[in-house]
Length: 458
Image 1 (cartoon, helix red, strand yellow):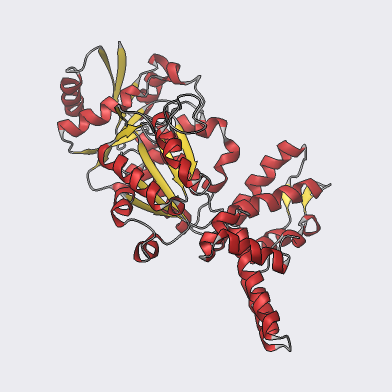
Image 2: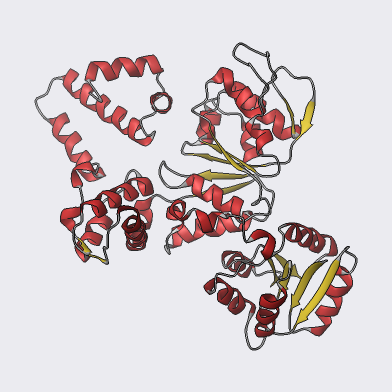
């Protein structure tokens, strides 16, 4: 029997919910009329699902969620919220609820949410399974912050998480787009299924269909056995398409066909298979501009852009730097066997003054090197390796002015500008020359020629 606990001070609502829930099979219903009573029953009977209201005497619904979080107790919870109160719904999910039902609710919507929540299983069945928040602490670095820009992004992720809507994440390199995608997945009903990532710029055009949809043995040279594609491997879960703007037109056509039918054909195969996945896409490019330049299909854009989440650059959320610095110091204390207890105010000021073109990724690596260098219990400025940090925009602007106004020849000035643009593109694409060439709108062959001529990377 599956146990459902209703926690609400409204006895009439208890009656209504019980009548609805009794239409489900193998259900045993329990009741609690305030948050404290709900807490006691949750910890004693271990329900498979708790339906929780907020406004209650003794202990509110949010108070109960907070207590469960402090005690690290994991339950499957559906929160009852006011129909027009989106902020309460976001807050509930952020505090640990799996889903919410706005009041007054429609029976069909109610059963849909309850059915999904019941599938998540009871605490005793899920406690042994690793979850993102439990087992991947180091991957949560982009989810630390209190700035309004960051909270807006996080709230948007929480809003779309319980749904099946496709999501498009926009942000610069290093801002943590993949982590936001994981955050959506692990706060969704699909969290027990696979989360699979495809770097759209890393797969050759002639292999992209095989990578996405799989292939049959002998379908092309090198296909020595049947292969399951990433779409099929993600069945029931989430497929994350990183840098979707790098997909070739041929690959875009194949992806669009799948999104329209939700069916796959393995390369060389004749049988179709229906697939249930959610697709989350991400890009650092302006897809609307790519559409205008005929580099990206507009109909595909509308398919993947069910909901948009914008991720701010680190320089737009500098108030989060003290929190991030503290988080990383604690993380790397453990990794590097250090015992740093404090960070000097001067370090924080220096970190906040820098523009962080590499965003969280660059920040993380900078702190890691600083922790390794630190031999005391306080992280100080001399532990920061400033030689590894790129120039700020102001410094670059001064360098450009100095070169362009100087006595250098025209060829020297052009070489300088080319070198700066290529170096910046390579940095933003983490050294990937194919992606850098695409960003610069030149061929890969042309890029290699310029790299050799200007001795970039030598």
